[in-house]
Length: 333
Image 1: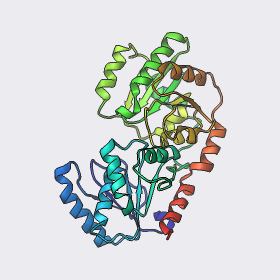
Image 2: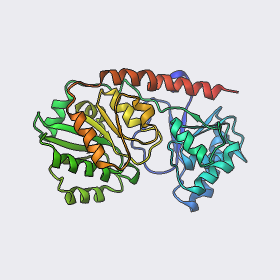
Image 3: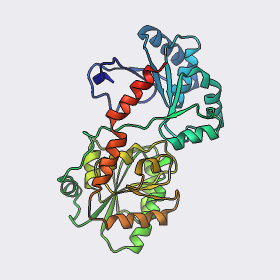
Image 4: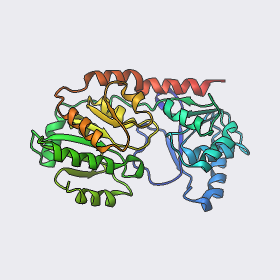
């Protein structure tokens, strides 16, 4: 948006900034919202910030920001309020009720895939046709195939150049269901003579649990946990297949990034996966590790990179295309 000539300020609620804006001139401001006790102070500070800045558009993301910003609008003039959910599952019945009761306060409600929109409608969080699907965008300049990546990553990890690389990327949380992936790797180990390794880039609250499962499944030689990485594009270029094993998502942007790097992709049938892959990757049922193992095995036998997948994804999910869609929504009357 800054590159299009707009002024942008970002307000965030919790945690530390791990990845900040790449454009200069974007101000970051923390409004601490960690529990119900901090809610009144967060409400007042957010209201004061909006009154002071007087933005043309307030665009909130995910459940806490969406609900709080809608409530702030009751006492604070907001010219145009856009609320964006980022999953087919943003919580239980109380959160869906909060969405429904505050829906009229948002000028536009969006989600990141058609499947996620349908989920919100089915749970009565929004009325029928009361929410739009706007995809997440990816900067295809940042995610592209590197011919040197495979050699570099294998040298770094001490892997044989003939070893097949399976890659997963994402936080260690319940939604990602890494146990499903590890069980599929166990099937693959038992049924296959192909030399392979699974590398996982990410971290999170379930790391110790995942480490325990790796030991219990006797996969300590087949699985490498990399922790947080800043070279995801390089890892995606290096892999022979990219895998998403989640139970639920909104729009798994990591699949778009993998396609951008010409990776051959396997995903569970989570919200948004079919809309992303559309024939340019394999989809298996959720929580079916044996089916996931078979799809991974088939992908490991593919020698060609997914060149057509990149071009398809670029035409549909390039950040330049998606940002133009947002500008149109911001200016709608």
